[in-house]
Structures are given as C-alpha cells and as structure tokens.
Image (cartoon, rainbow, N blue to C red; front, side):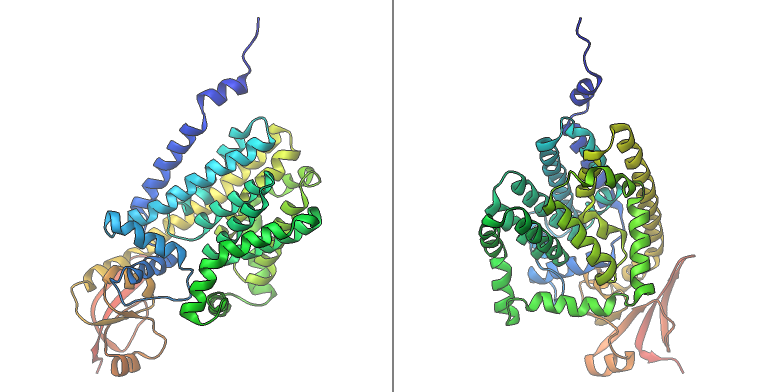
Length: 416
C-alpha cells in the first residue's frame, strides 16, 4: 500500500494561491491603516505634481513609482490606499517570480516561497509606497531570465530595476561582474538589453535635466547629505542592522555558498559591501534587496529542519524590529497628522519639517525650512509653519503625545 508523502499533501493543501490570498489580505490591511512614512509623502506629492494637481515636487526622487501612481489615480481617483495597492501587487509579483525561481532548482519550492512571502520585510514594505518592492520584482524577473539563459531579457529587467530604485544599480554591476566570470562570450546580450531597458529613463533625464545621468547624480548628491559618514557613524550601524535583520540566516549561508553560482555570489557581495561601507544607510529595509537570494543560498546547503530553524529565527528578529518600528511610527505620527488636519482649512503657503507628508496632505504649497522662518515669510510669502520645534511665533494650535510634539505657527505674528 502506498502511503502519501506528507510534503505532497501539504503542497496540495497549502498551494501558492492560498499563500497569495493570505499575503494580499495582510498587506492590504496594513496599506489601509498605516500612517504615512516620510518617503511615501515624497512619492505621493510627486504623483500629484505629475497629475497636474500640485506645485510641490521633490525632484531627486526616482520618478517611475510616482508616474505609476498618477496613472492609477486616473482610474480610481486620488487615494493613499490605491497608490499603496500598486506596491501590494508588486509584492504579489515578487512571490510568484520567486516561486518560479525556486521551482527551477528545488523539488519543494513552496516552502521556501512561504518563508519569503511571510518575511516581515516583504510584508511591511509591500504595503507602503517605496521603490524597494517594485524594483525587487524586476530584479527577481531578471534573475529568473538569467536562470533560463534569456540574457537579453535579463539585461532589460535589471536595468529597469536600477531606474526604479537607483541603489539596485549596484546589483546590476554585481550581476555584470559575475556574468563576465561565468559567461564571457555572451556579455553583449545583457549589455544591449540593459541599454534598451534604461533608454526611457536616460532620455527623460536628458530632456528634463540636460544629462543622461543627471537624475542619478542629483540623487547621489542629495543622499550624501542625508547619510551618515565615518566608520562608527555608518559602518557599525550597518553591520548591526544586517546582523539583527537577517540573524539566523547569516550562519546558515555557509553550507550552500559553495554551490551558488558566481553571478549570484557577485550580486550579494557587491550589494553588501555597498550598504555597509559606502551608502551610510542602516535601515533594515535595505536588506530586502538580497533577502530572496540569501534564502536560496541557505536552502541549497542546509538540511530542511535546520533551514526552517534559521528562517524562524530570522522571521522573529526581523518581525520584532518591523512591528516595533511600525507601532512607534504610528504613535509618533499622530501629532503631525492632527496638526495637518487642523491646518487644512488655512489658506496660504506653509513651511514644515515634514514637508513631504505635509505637501501631500495639505494640497497647498509647502516648503522645507531650508532658511530661516523670517526669510521664508518675507521672501517667499510663507504664512504658516507646522513644526516640531519651539519657534518665536504665536502658536495657533499644539498637538502632542508621549512621543512627539507638533505646533502650528502663524508667521505673521512673532512673539513679543
């Protein structure tokens, strides 16, 4: 008598369709309820600008996501949820493509796909308007094409990933180096594909900014001012972020590393070096870019029980970080949201230290405090300020909790 294999029964019960439905429900609930993150305000404000509904514009941001949002708003009307739902769909796409990648190599692709799908980094950032998940979709698509020896398409997709999220150009470089080491006689195909995939971005940059790479240079210049510099300020936090976010997955990489292709190794190595030693950023979400590849490496070399243990540790530690950060952000943004609700009936220009979010929420001209409030008032005709700092102007209304204070100032009424 044949006894059904337990793993086969599990695959039939818990197939990828159920996985996608659960992912959709979870991320949609986050997308509907979560407070705006800083960068979301920038992308949404730029989407309003591209739609012709706002004069606010943060030009250093990659434009692709904002153009996509402005396009979907033509169908749905302007809303944060519909904008976020684009990224939710990109997250679903990431899971589907990752499952196809795993199917090319493993007999049990659903289990590793489930670990990826329920990783807190993917769940949380698939519900927010950031470039990480849409770019990851194109990156995974590129790697899948690479697996199937469709090198021209791999080049197109990796270049699109790099134009959606500029830091992914490091992964494109890593793929190129590995490609040369593994397939020297075919390098022309991904190069031509890369040129074709990046052509719309290069033309856009040339037409509007007078240089093919002007947008990227502008972004790098701005980011260099935002990021930490120095070993202690940047490298140590980057290492700590990686260790905490990836935790149990890191020691699990060793057994499968030797069976991993040079291209995959090159991408992981190039990106890790860039994030820790060059970028000056230690945000946990930056590790999402290589998480699927690290899972593949670990799955290759480990006994399944040890893989699940390593994955469970990673899910717990990264989940703790994501949940804690999300709850803190939700609580700390409440005074700002209340201040913006109060300010929505005021007429005139604003200045705010959260200018990206304020620009989207107020639908009024909002400036950053790039010079003194008195100069902004006299030279730019700014009438009101929404700030978290104490300023020498009359407070129209204040909002606070145990995390943060926000004040609405009338700049035409200095304190005596």
